[in-house]
Image (cartoon, rainbow, N blue to C red; front, side, top):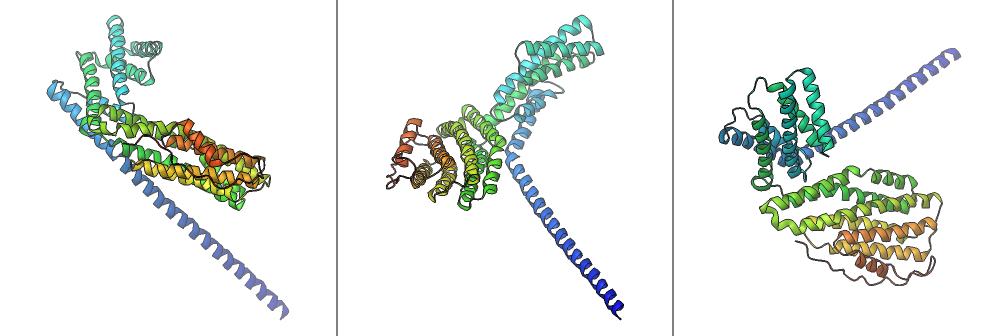
Length: 420
């Protein structure tokens, strides 16, 4: 009887373990499926977002390709103007802000390729080794002349066409040269006159990822300081360091917007706003780097168990809000007064934290709040000298850690040239 009871007990334990494992497996599988579902939705959302952003470029490229074909075929009488639409699309495919230069590079590259190809074919004929020699010569000549990679590729490609198609296609050189000129010119016509993008909208879209990244990580660092959570602050530091793509996109968009405002009469009235944005690029980059130093030192502050006065996380949080307000006011074409005031509020809170008493790393965090706030003030359109004066005034007297910071100084609204 006892043996039977023991056997039944072991059976129940095995059954319970099996059911427990089954429940654990079910929960794990359900969680995995949920994650995959969320990731699939996020991926689809990201892809649709990228499609929406590229619709303008797609429309420009399609229109430019069609018009380039019509211009080369109908107006210039080229029976097979293949290179004209290729040149148009190639011009539009490069980063915005470089299209005028790309058109010049296309023409120069074709010229070098035609010259080298014709010269060597005339003396050496055509064939595999002649092709190899022509391509090598075109590349060497381009490099010697200091040409860019785009000119080098175009010269080599044109040289290949000259060597391979010359025996079967007469007078290839002039149509090839004209097609490059027509295609690049049509691309510029489409972007400047027929279908110009709104440069301010392009800039807002490009600036948002960089500014959102900065604001979000400053907020995470502020929360980490309040909670003394080293991992949260370290995570913010890692994410902020990985900002090359966002800054590169922002810089390219600025160049493209300036090109559009220069070439497109319909966008000339946006020049002052674009200038304001362009001048903000460098101080925003500096704010990124100084915020990285701030967050890195905040990690050390928590590791060393230094004091974290209550105003210190508030100061970092005000910096994050200043970044968001800067992006909002820029996008609306408004004078960024709220962003400036929030930056000075961050400095004032940093002054209170310093007065309450901080350690070595804490003093560095306070100093970086001041420096980042100064960067954001310059990005808002005021001079570096005026920004420094406002920061000193908002911080209060520097009597050393532990000394009372005194009453919060009155924040004087800074002035700047009007936007727009």
